[in-house]
Length: 225
Image (cartoon, rainbow, N blue to C red; front, top):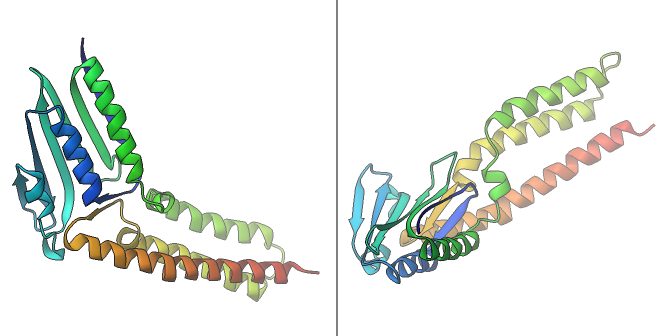
């Protein structure tokens, strides 16, 4: 029986050489031909017909990988395609499979296992839409107005609120760079990923926890009778 199966995943991912190798080798196990296309930040598309040449790509900053497509043809009418995109808001990982049902469903299951192993720990931050920024700031101001409309807002509460608004805006400004939808840790991209991980853990997470703690303590102190 001929079957079509799709996968659309919306979490942030880190595509390491190991993960790319697993996808390619899984395709090779059923495909007569496997090939790949890289779309890079210099607006060039680079085509590869072997795993070794793909993993040998330097991935420099000036031509960093923005999307990776791996495709294969198998059986008489079977097709498989994986697209990993770092710039997409909607679908970060897309898969299109066509072929005999048993082979397609087995391939789909194996790919899902690989993809979940690529899931970035900061996904909850990366997938927040910018519209949340436009909602959270007015909501905080409305809360302050409602709660203190008949009183003067304590300076500590006002300061903590302004600090929270600043943190929210700064977080969204930094999010694309520090919490990207997709990371290709291939070639020079691996060093960039390692540096970004150090910044995320040591600076961003530590600073965020410190500011949040200070803001909560200020509010609690101000509300004490």
